Image 1 (spheres, one colour):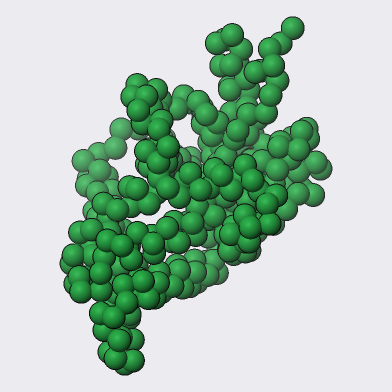
Image 2 (tube, one colour):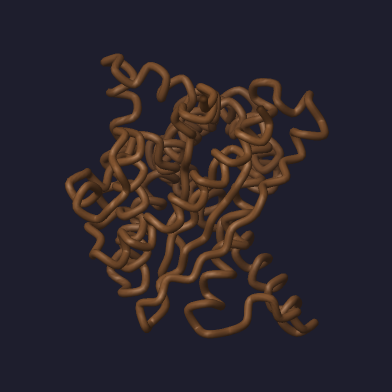
Length: 311
């Protein structure tokens, strides 16, 4: 007889990649990419979390930052792999020093871009408003609330603009396929196209909900630790380290919101994240759903086998 642990639902999540989907379970990941000839290529592997070696990192708040960091690393690797597969580049080929240098430069540029977009511009926009209404330095809460609102608006505008790019539309369609497939699995459906296509593209556990929770928590933190008298350089030096506790607390809130998702207050709280998915997800086609099925089925089977071997 199979153990209850083998039969119980496995917690899976994922993300869209270049012409594909990456799914992950507690111990495994699977990347499925649909090539130009419609052949679906799949790669899977074990997730070796640092929390397995350092148990204290499983503590609330700390685990949130670890999960975020490890998800970003895995997500980057999945994007890199999918791009190589789609362009018929051998992903196992060792990268040259030139490629590694270009990746480092691209990473540095992206960090600078994020700092300018989400720290420097909102700060000076709020300073400009303070000068206009003559309220400079009067309220830390209002100042940081204003900066937080500007950050959200800039983020929404940025994502909305890139959503018109054809390549981004494709990614958002795969994002929709990922959500539909997870919905079907969570409702004990057999994973096939006909069962999956009826489900919505909007899912309450999507990372977009995490982003909006993070914005709210950051406003509270910055109101406490960043008074208006701090110049923009101080804000950069303090905001970045504060992302560690902010990410950790946001993760715990996201877990609680999933646990009490039927509560009316939780529904109101996560509504902005769900509404935002109207932009970041689109209806997928058959091949995109088939790709998501491949990724999900692989990771589910790996996790079941792992749980069975542990028994």
